[in-house]
Amino acid sequence: MTTMVPAKAEPLAKELFGARKLPAAAAPAAYGFYSKGCLAGGIAIAPDGAHWQAMRLSRNRRWGHPDLIRLIERLSREAAQDGWPGLLVGDISQPRGGPMLSGHASHQIGLDADIWFTPMPNKRMSVAEREQVSAVSMLKGNTLYVDDRKWTRAHEAVLRRAAKYPEVERILVHPGIKKKLCDTVRGDRSWLHKIRPFWGHHYHFHVRIACPKGSTGCKPQDPTPRSEGCDDSLAWWFTEEPWRPSEGPEKPKARDVMTMAALPNACRAVLEAPAPPSEAAVTLAGPEGLPAQATRSAPALAGAADPASLLLSLQPADIPLPSPRPYR
Ligand SMILES: [Zn+2]
Image (cartoon, rainbow, N blue to C red; front, side, top):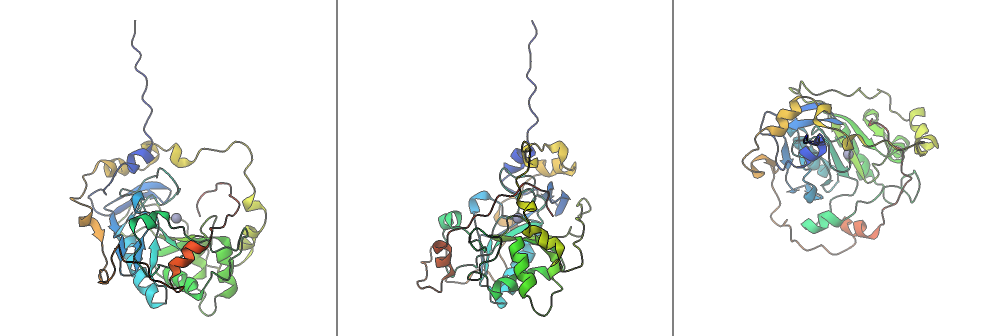
């Protein structure tokens, strides 16, 4: 009689990376591509800064390459000078990057960050509020067009500020938002070529930086065309084609089949590397720290001026679900 030893299925990379609570203590490096790779030497952005609040803390996706985390801090400060009260920071990456258990095809190498189109309210949200509060769609109802009651010059300004950083290669926004910028930006339009239309991205914009210096294992993405992109390539998004449901059986998502073999070899070492002594040791708090009155338990400020009231009064709008396509 022979004993059958069942072959153990190769574990999915998303489960291995999703289980790591702290980064790989190593020199900062992005390995692989935005949608297939991992991150060494990641740091976290603190839940609170003078000009930002991180959302959905339970996801533990506040991690990124130090160049990206510093850029978010800088954007939060400089956007505040432009009149954007502060950033609500969405998902960045897992501590060691890699594919995620849910959401996002990209965000794997610590170079992608989601920033809400909702400005930071003038109170500090509790941990529970940061889980529950919904972002507000910038679209008008069930259409592909921006709602002019929600869109402001401050939205344009925060996108311009982010797009003009040389490290930022592209910013993904909903096609309706790209169209709004094409139609309304006056003066300097040199940054519009970095604003790329893509599915989703009407609740948040997605900032992607280039492969950092020293990350020799990072695979660059093709540069965006130099033109503004306010042409046929944008008009295509307002046809039926991009929104048509795909035919035939749905293919499984890459993250649901990806094993370690699909990732760069360096990612095995990243996965097994020791962790830093604590999260605090690798968290960026920002040079200004927090204003003295800002605490997690601060009461909501009364009055319609508080953008948080907008958060709660508007229902997120739905748009047709697109068929999956590769990231741009
Ligand atoms: Zn994103």
